Image (cartoon, rainbow, N blue to C red):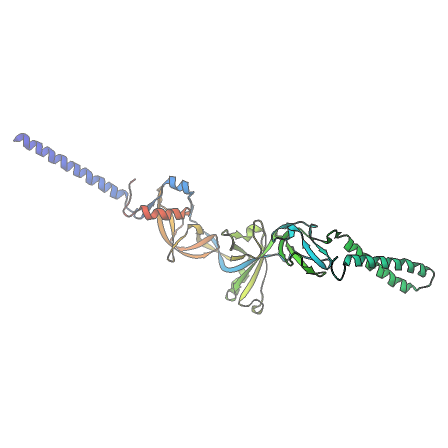
Length: 378
């Protein structure tokens, strides 16, 4: 009996020991995870796979922004209208039949022929007029030397001759087997074509417009009630409707050209016009969101717009847990103005926070599955 009693005491002692160790282990886990509620686990391997990047929040300058609509337009200094140099039937060259095609200065874009028209070929008429004027001029010189006609009559004959000569030589230089050749006056791209193949054109009629896209204009339509802020605007950012990229005029050698001075001229909006270099594939005529950049403010927290997620009008960001390599927290923030690239944060972030700037969507997906309400194991 003594043996059994001893064995029972030993067993009880061992059980109590195991329970005590378990209690200590649970308490250690609780202490280790205190303050980590709501963490999202996203491993370093996952972060590397999605190209996750972060940015340390810093208080700094941020400019006032007026977001408006606008349009990209061709610069009036970089356009050339090609007109018909003769009347007749127009034949467009292959390079000039499609808008957007590249055209070189001096390149033939069309030919105009009047050979089968009732009015006859103007080139042939010009040749006949020139030869007639030449014969009259030579005869008049002989008569003038003999004092048979006056000097005034001789001057009139000479004037008619020189006019006929200039007209004929101007046409003769452009004559081909197809008719009068029409050439481009500058290099650029076909902006629009005003005629179709086989149309009849009159001398001086526009055939097409060539534009040089090296320089474009940005027109912004600002509401009249914001007129008081216009004097602070010096540059702008914009996002074309055909492109999700934000362009900064500062990076495109841009400058402010002008803005409307009276409401009567601009209707409900004030037109603000900028000019800039087209260093990409921007196309004139494209509509755009425009961010007019105003005066600078200090002491502002701003983050890239890529950091934001939105749920039913409420904005969130994801920040890295300090001291952790693979833990993140979802933070609700209040936003202010944005310039297309960065957005002002009014509340929700502090100086020194590390916010996710790329990979936000992947973190959001991970939060649905891996959010730990009471902590996690280290």
